[in-house]
Image (cartoon, rainbow, N blue to C red; front, side, top):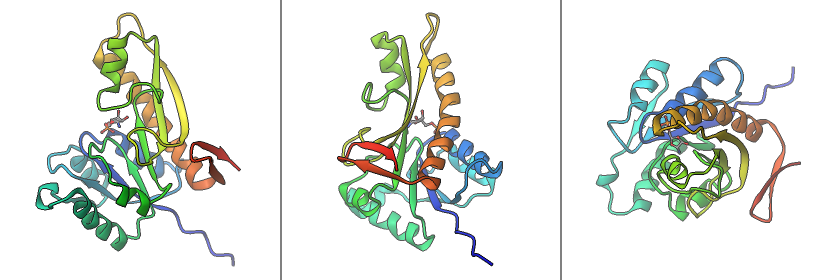
Length: 207
Ligand code: GRF
């Protein structure tokens, strides 16, 4: 009998709410996404993502960044935990800490991020607020591989979200999050089950 291919093991990194983490976990439970969450990792002991992890019965890890002298030392401690759990993929979901080149090299083309805008527009921590203040009529969601620059790597999937005349921050964020919760599992499925390559360090293409 042919051996079944083992499921890819992921760690989901969250600093706050963790709604994307939950959406990914639910998509796995429904059979839509084929991978295994080895752990939810957070740099913030107060993150609501811990409550979700407990409810979902997913192991969680907190490491206090303040206990380390440098960002790299902090990441070395994280890598130790991830190796112990045989984690192959890092899924950033509202992780607010910049990763160093050390970590990015260690998981080259195996770190994924979701950003609430149509990149390269509105990079940074307040993409939803920035899109509203700029007055664009369309924004959206991007799922991309992570490289050394912030909100920059090869784009896997994007989806547009229209900005309505009477939108405020809350209503727009709400619609964007609903799109995110579908788009992230879809993008992860592409990564885990299709053949793909990155052309000229920039373009993500199916092969
Ligand atoms: C999302 O909007 C994501 O695009 C951004 O951070 C937010 C995280 O939300 N990177 P949540 O913690 O998954 O609810």
